[in-house]
Amino acid sequence: MIRPLPNKDLKNKPIGVFDSGLGGLTVVNQLIRQLPRESIIYFGDTARVPYGSKSPDTVRKFAVQLTRFLQAQGVKFIVVACNTVSSVAMEKILEIATVPVLGVIEPGANAALSASHNRRIGIIGTTATVSAGKYQEVLTSMDADTVVFSRACPLFVPLVEEGWIDSEVTEMVARIYLEPLMKSGIDTLILGCTHYPIIKDIIRKTVDLSVTIVDSAIQTAREVRRLLSDKQLLNDSEKTPEYRYYVSDFPQKFEEVARRLLGQPLENVRRISLDDCL
Ligand code: DGL
Image 1 (cartoon, rainbow, N blue to C red):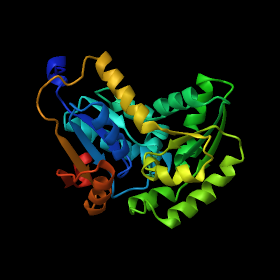
Image 2: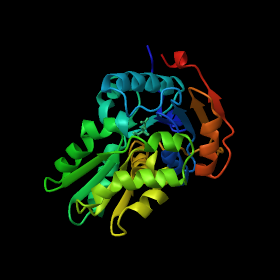
Image 3: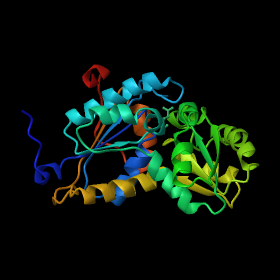
Image 4: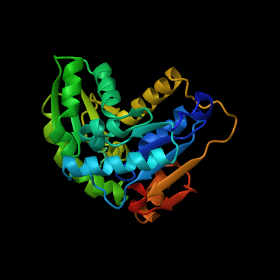
């Protein structure tokens, strides 16, 4: 029989975070700021990124593997730091989860509703996220008067994964994607993909100044803090937190972009075979 760990032991376990690649590091960045005593284990599925152009069934299969992998590492809580997975695979993940799990859609939707005055909200995300319409569903269930305008921006993820974070090419792509969205009169724009905060400066330049940009990573980290506190799972040890990063393919690019994003080199990046996640 598997006996659940008493809270006292669970508290000091790491938080597990996963994403299709390096985008979820935007959530890790916020978790480190808002929960500096928590250890984190991150998995970036760099061998199979992007998820956003794959079918829901495939994404669900990957999500189950990564959830199992993190659970096998003994995490106390899982953050699904990928909008695509949060849009299409949460039910599947909850079926197999043995620890609390949080996706990024509800925190982002909440933040957008608090920011919006005219209830015209824009969402940009991967093709899979936009087709799933989860943001739309959650936003209109929270406030039926909300009108949602969405736009898939599939080129952003490969540009970010390649490290083209301040390139003119990325600026041009952003203009092509975002200018039509500006005509819809939105006052709030949700960055519905964890890769997008990495190019937030470019997105900021492209959208009207009056538009509030919602980075769901910030809101997600806040929600993790609230849930851990409610469940009495906040780490109370004096030990220095540990951060471990796993990727499923070459770690070099991941390390390079991560260094720029987190402002320090990552020491513990390990490449593991996907067979270990099965
Ligand atoms: N970063 C992920 C998201 O938030 C997915 C990007 C991708 O793999 O296409 O949707």
